[in-house]
Length: 134
Image (cartoon, rainbow, N blue to C red):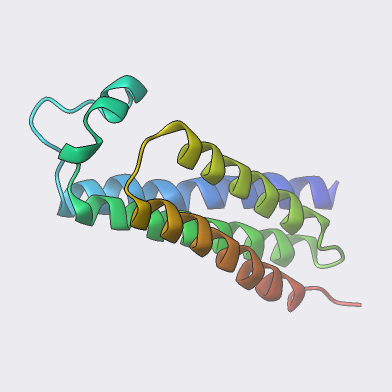
């Protein structure tokens, strides 16, 4: 039961972290153009060139920080297994790569997002592993 809770809370923390960086900070510091609808995937696909670069950078930071925070919290709660952290990390990797494939992006955005979530996975694994007591 504890590992299930660790996984669930880890996913919630990861999602909230992404939301904070991507939406609260990114959109506040680098507002989307007038009439933008960030919840409409078609609008995003057709108007990616209008989204400020700073906002895109916050998306990359959010994905990186989300996977690290989620895996860390999963390890912190579980204390006995890395499986919850792996589940959180795996789902966040899948979500990020799905996002990369679904939305047309500049090469720098695609590469940095993909590479940083992989780095984030290994950093999150390392932080979660330090929470495991044997």
